[in-house]
Image (cartoon, rainbow, N blue to C red; front, top):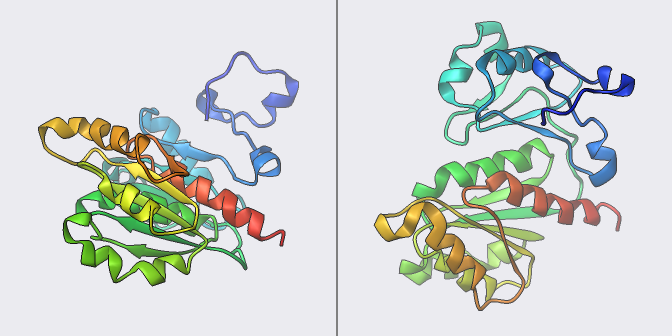
Length: 235
């Protein structure tokens, strides 16, 4: 959601309070609805949005990076109208219809990556996409990923989430023929540099065809996987 220049008459119908303008046509253009990125938005603007799009509103809206203290500050009636997940900081009132085809595996190196794993997983759930989560598959114990490989390869796309040296992206990228979307996380000591090292590692991966996303961007990876799943609905 963006703050834009002064709107024309057509924009006025879509404009909410606080100068926020919804891109309602996005689903028709790209097959993915707009989400509300909450981090940095004024609390009063978020309160207004949450009051509008709860369960039964008829308009599914995904809220990402919604801090627990912001959500808990809402009236009880508003909170009860949402599915809220504190670890991933995601919320929705209604979800999109379930997709009959397509499954996505979300694979993480460790449980410390959980916030990003569950942002991706919750986004897939909101989008109506079947998904499976495989946590704690880091390459420090290669048997962990090896024993789950057949299950992972039964999916149509794979999201890999890893911090530190992010080696899991290269290892899994060399073991699965499915589209791989890699998300570096900001987990790690010192030279992990808040995810910069993991991002660099994924970008220079020797496994061909691995798509890499911004640090901690589980939402973006889920949307990429959703584009694959959306194509499957046409077959």
